[in-house]
Image 1: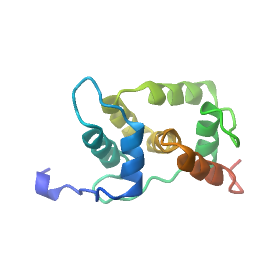
Image 2: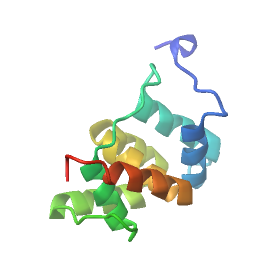
Image 3: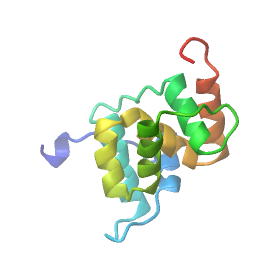
Image 4: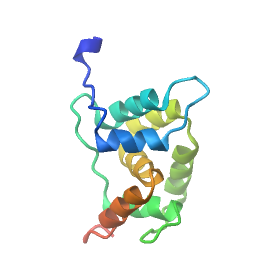
Length: 129
């Protein structure tokens, strides 16, 4: 893919700002903004479509974050969430390709209070729990 063909999100995008806050600079020396752009691209792709976070995924992540509204996950999903939370940015990008909903939810939750509130609202939706 040529660089000019890539979708570049606006820097004022709230999801990009949340991802930037959630990611620390890795040993590779990339800035938080560059890492956030990599995660954003992995999560949303070239089209900029947002990942759908189900109420179940939101509840699993809230449980991991010890936040109100959480529900325990299976052993595999609990380990997956732990792996995502501990992953360096480049590995988080790889995990996002396989588990975009869990990476998006955890990134949102790690961004702080507003992200937790969004996850709680998603988890509270009727139907999936």
